[in-house]
Length: 531
Ligand SMILES: [Ca+2]
Ligand SMILES: [Ca+2]
Ligand SMILES: [Ca+2]
Ligand SMILES: [Ca+2]
Image (cartoon, rainbow, N blue to C red; front, side, top):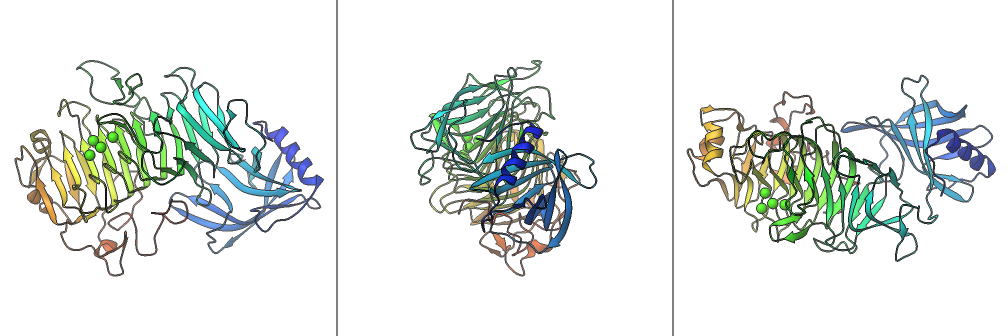
């Protein structure tokens, strides 16, 4: 396969191959005219946080790079492969550029500060199968390659190969021999059984940069039932709780695979980027009550980016945080077998724009939140900040949100509906940490939120106040029907004009409740698995 990290080498190849033969394809996202040296990209989506703008653009070969020579704003064009420029990573993903008889994926990187904009060629990879790279072995079918064991060098998974995860695949040692796993847009990774999982160890990184038109897919083989493979686990060096007093840094073993430790003293720890990624049909019970989740985040730090990630049909939890400070945006958690969002061990991260939608026939809680099961008051105490969640349950489920075992949380601008019980607080430590309605400590709050369940509030064990009093004593809360149409607000929904800004730089400032602005703001479209 054509692949190298050397931009000069890549450009030489690009030029030579492009100049050698020219053809066009109606499916190509970009074409090249050897007479002018111009790469024509009729649709370029520029991702800028949660919004995007569309252009048509032309680049021209120039020296050792490509220079922007023209760009025109165009209306949004979705539902087809296109060039995507991700402002956050300054990478340009060209899913398909046809050159002669071949079709390539190209990744360009913006030269910082360049004007006019210049790009270097970071990757040029055939979109057809070229054999398995040396870090893998041939899989059972043509076009598949198998990953196994521990990787101590940087590796890149490309979309021209069907990748198979065999048993535990580890990126890096534990804070030694660290490595980066890069996963290109559109790449598909499969586990074959519950014990097949992908694990990013402390000190290593995952750079899974999908795009709206070419999401990364991690899945079981059949895509029919939960638990077809293990899932994705990331361990980091951010603070966790659960150690004896005075032990620093606190490092704890993962519940299901106890040889793996996580946690540390770096709240800003960076485990990489996961964007536009589906994690499907995962989850594996190693022992009863000790499971792999779709996405397990062990002591993962706030330097990590998780944005536009779906976990669908997981056997256990959708996303489970064991401590850490990681923030999450644009989460889609659908048909999850246990809890869609689960935390313990002192998670102090953030989340905004979260859709939780349970299946009719399975599922426990929308959110199951602990500080620590063994010692409810241990520090650092779990206290995430969460905003713009749409949490939709089913009669077979239990609670929409269960806050227990000493957890704190600041919940903003969220809507919960369809569960037997919408909100429950459980355990004396949780109540005492919260304070009392009318005199709350600020440790456990919920504002500008809507609940609409069979029973809106459930007082758990050790209650020192009524959950209904806690809810109604806080600003902007409502028990009226939020008028959802599926998971989107219907026209006239009270959600669209009810939000309050969260005073924190992580959060986009929006003025609505729930994960979606209005009936037209369905940011789950195109990149998610059908739910
Ligand atoms: Ca779990
Ligand atoms: Ca759980
Ligand atoms: Ca549960
Ligand atoms: Ca739990």
